[in-house]
Image (tube, rainbow, N blue to C red; front, side, top):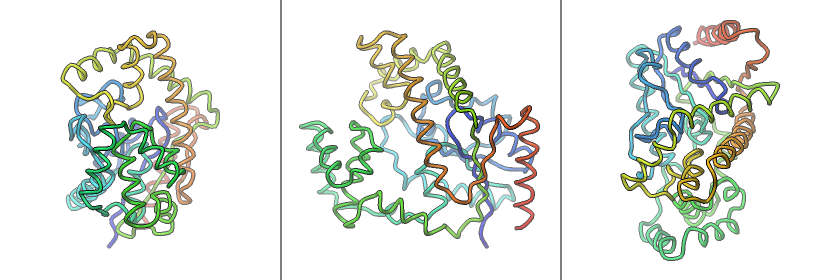
Length: 316
């Protein structure tokens, strides 16, 4: 019998974290994070990671599970998330997946055939050596030719994801972008999925929340957090250290930009990221959108969302 799950998606700073806590309390649930940066330990301020106090004793899964220098994959997320879903459900609780990383959520909602694919180690090591010797840009340019759609979504310094995309193309004959499109036609029947998205009709309201969040990150000593990570010895070009907020502060620490310029770059890049998230989640035909600015207050918003959840859960 399919397991009922709730997914709370939407752009950064839209209010997913607070809603997830209240949903868990109201429906006896536990939370699984679908945020590709909150999996990393010691990266708290720049990822807007929920604190222990903010969790309000609600169990959270897949937060702080690997070090920033670990190459964490979508396949690993899929495996761990599905194990957590099964465990939560066996204890008669509701699994609630919360986050803004589209590929992570795809791996739960859809059957993604490339997730379990493993290429020949020799090929992977060959690409790694090329990247170490010549830089990741040469591999990125190759990906642009072989799979421009995927290349557009990947940072040129994200060596791990570039290599993964090249592997899939070489050994399956199809680019990752093909699997991502086709996956939408194969809904994962392990779960009965209730999916909502938080959004704003007035995009400027969302942007203000993003700008305010970045200002608070700086006030809460994001600079010190990045300095500590670099002092420990984490590679500034790793996937984790190229995350929003971290790469811009590294540029500031290296004297390339002023703190004011770095802060504005974080805001601008985060706003752009939010737009991409909204576009991604709008591709889900079964998502139910709730626009925060349609409601007078948070209580009215949650009342409507909880009514929607209750109606759906009663069907199962």
